[in-house]
Length: 427
Image (tube, rainbow, N blue to C red):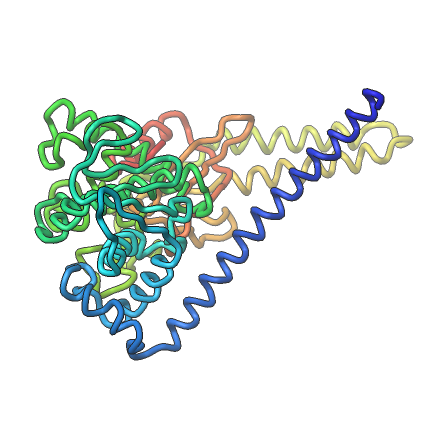
């Protein structure tokens, strides 16, 4: 076979493989999303707890899981539906003579449901194997003794003794199950990136927590245990333990981190009776709108005049050209429109009042876009030949991007940036 023919066949093969991969990826995401919609539809139609679920899971959880016990009745039904699906999705196996009982499966799976209860994609699909040891064990990977570990090959390993202790003492901020499942959720973000919203939020979380990790290692932060300063992954896992076992103290000591974890996990342990208690609306109260701004941009008259003069000069330059080239006159007219649109789009006022950011929709429209500063994940100024402002923010639990063309002076940029950083927004 000639080299040219081989090269053609290889090109066809890799092209087909790529197309099949793309089809598989999107079809998988589609059917997963469809399954979630069907599940949510079923939950909306169910008013009383199904007897089968109550007999299989409810009594065990009500006795052993404080989180489940504190949920309102409709949320318990959702919890049990997810629990049943998650148990079927995972393969459990015991080591050193331990037999994994149905109760063990229920309690371990319940920890996963608890962690992902606010998320749409809650199965942590990549991790399909859970190995349970009776006590501490020698890891097959590190050759050291562990209480638990999460392996990149899709395996979660737990010591049953220490898993039980984590739930038996529910307010000591030590929970092996939640800790290892937090690692699994973190790794699945990288290894099986199905939930784009969670992926973006987690990337923003990692940028935010760098300072807190430094404070732990320097002794400034004595609230979280020292192990949280090991790296970003351990910081997240330890935060999850504190989040569920000491939410009141967590909120008191580290309110910014607590609120961002609420946004990330889409739940608020301080108020489990209200499903959306973690959400902060981007629409402010009337009182905030009437407040004096702590920052307000101005539109430079010099800048307006420069743009207008350039527009007029360009228009007339093309208009007085030779009549044999009428398309140049038309081009000059388009250029005038372009400059005028530039004037309209860039002459917007941006203000910060209280804990909200306001941006005019346009010079001709005095209505404003509003964003809660607590919902804003990051703000960036576009620098490549355009005066742009890009905002990554949360809107009803979903990550959205807002972009507008706006003109700020260098002094205004510095003042605005200073306020944004003080509000723990990535800039």
